[in-house]
Length: 463
Length: 79
Image (cartoon, rainbow over all chains, first blue to last red; front, side, top):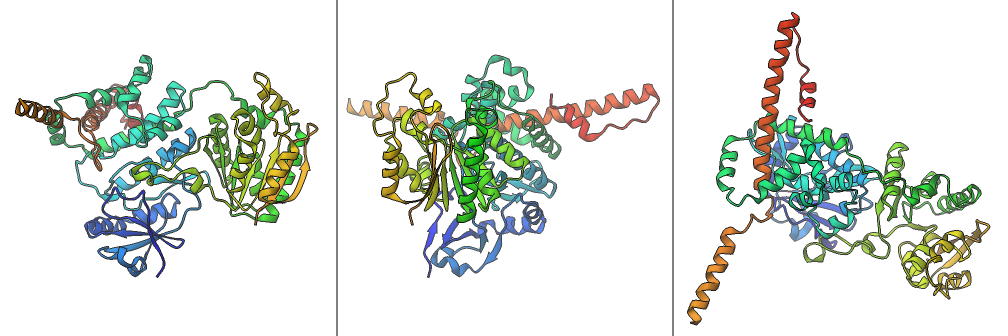
């Protein structure tokens, strides 16, 4: 019998749970969910969403696969395994917005088939490349005429409010969301947004009014009244339609172009250097053929694109610049690149957190690829963040058996810029130590100097 | 004296329990959200009705049988 592992993030809804058996993803459907399960599948909604790529597929499998864990389950389903799990606090604004729109699209399609959703958590959305996909096929149940949208507040906290934080206040949602896993409450957001934002009907109602209503101490009478009134279906549809139109128009507050975005277009990398780097990455990718390549410090995804064009199947990028992430996400969607850029502060990656510190997994556990790239990266960690060079190399090499790391020497203009305002305490930051540290952990397959300043790419293999 | 103290603590605990805000259970829709939805739905429906009359009025004076586009009238409600 194979080992059955419980997904530690799947405990809220008692109607079913996720398990892993070897590489397979299995889901129990408990007896209390049977009626809804049959009604929803009978409505054709699941087939419609799966074939549109909006919902992860499912097949009924033998309950015996789960052994003891399967006892008591009415059914056991199998879902395809997703190659990478990410969380809303790692998504760019554009990704969170795409996930919000997917959620609303699904709700609108569901309501047409008399199906409602049990919740509106952003953690039920994952990305396949830059495309959002809904992963909780048990979030559906029969719609009852006149019922309220149970997930409205959750939708506000996990989608709308974090988007507004960036859209109106210019604050990226990531740090706040990571600290408060359930998102941003209307009460908190209403204290941050400027008074003038009340002029927007949507902000006024969904943020300020909701916060005010939530505070009302004696609301039991009002709630009884509201409940008794019922929410007519047309009202439900109007709310969903209105939110969709509003969210589709949200954009990050403009704060001018960010430093990194300049890199991708004009920049202090000379064009010839970029061409050499691309061809090095292309050669690496076509040799290694990685299913998953991690691109640490991906900027707008130039080198992920080069890897994908040359045999890599999926690239997950990481960067701390929000502008670059939004640009990269948009580009991946426009160019149909199987690329997802995520937010990462390499000096403080996502931790294990949530219930029992196991609900949401940390970066280290998830960041395991077939290949890794760290281009124009290490000076930001070893110099700007004071991280020991040998540890930075170890951190990157741990992520994948093979990879490409760029060494950026001290005399490079970018490093000089980092050292401009501070003392140079980095004695071992030089090429010879870099090679020695990397050589301790892996074999250097190939190296190539790509710039006049001496930037050098190293292809390593630690197998 | 110890008894009075105990009673006082019990009263405080009771008060906290009674007046505590609703917890985020799976899934508490939230009082604010429910009241807000009823208001939003009420407004949306009222606007729809008003718009219908407005189109009828316009049609009456222009002498044409204009029919409002349902989707369009929905869009205009979300100022």
